[in-house]
Image 1 (spheres, rainbow, N blue to C red):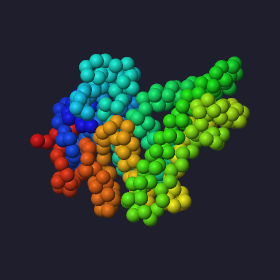
Image 2: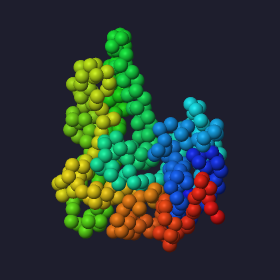
Image 3: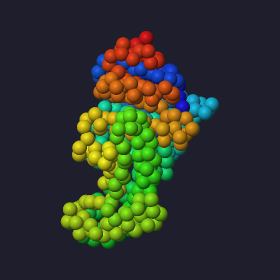
Image 4: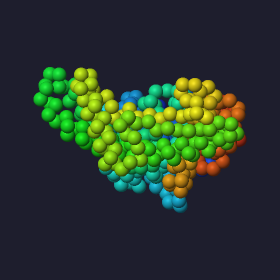
Length: 367
């Protein structure tokens, strides 16, 4: 799985870029605020249609420009394809192309350029709030399962509509008449999310345990536990049973939701816990243990995606090595002997032996 070329026009601070990449390690160097992370963001967006930084697509359009144009050339399994995204400054929907043919949805591009991103914020994701851990799982699942991506989009749409009903009912009580319909649909789609997540986290936990065992020399036992609503006793149950469990949970919270004016429960509150030898990492883990576990999760994600696609996904390490001590740096670098990797770094001479070096300055590549 290789990204061979990337062309950018008016993306973030890049007015124009046409860059070829090495099939192995690509080291992106430069001072802070020059565009290294912008380049990583462009690569990740090319593969998934999602930004790990921007809340609105217009944020990715260079200041003063009307739109951003991003085109990636990808070679995998002896086949080369092009992915193109045109992102507009405003509310106009983006345009999506695969091999020059316009597509209706991002799902039609998924799987062409799968990526695994690891940034400094991910090192402490196990100590952060549940929303950050959900994003970690959702981003991986959206690439692995296009149907999950569609279900998540639908769930969030219904959730927004339900929240509007709950807010409006104080002044317009009649809107509550349609609430049962929204609850039913929300639980049906939510059950799909739980089913996907349960299987993904089970596989992720087993793979991460293997990496953590190598990292710690077998001194600690890694375990991951998926947490969803309390009425779901078995997240591996059939979707119909999960739907019933979610409806039961909503009924128990009906009065509280009316009083608060918002949806209080559901898969949008899901989380997962990691423990080491039975000790909860979020509550009692040291910074070193937390970082080691986070690295294990990311390496596990890469392994699962490689198993799914038959080739390793592109690994994006955005300034993460500078946050690690020498031992953890060595462990990560020893795991990337295969596949294509992009590493950003502020110190040009630090990892130059790894592969091709690309120096960035003010949104331009220095020759």
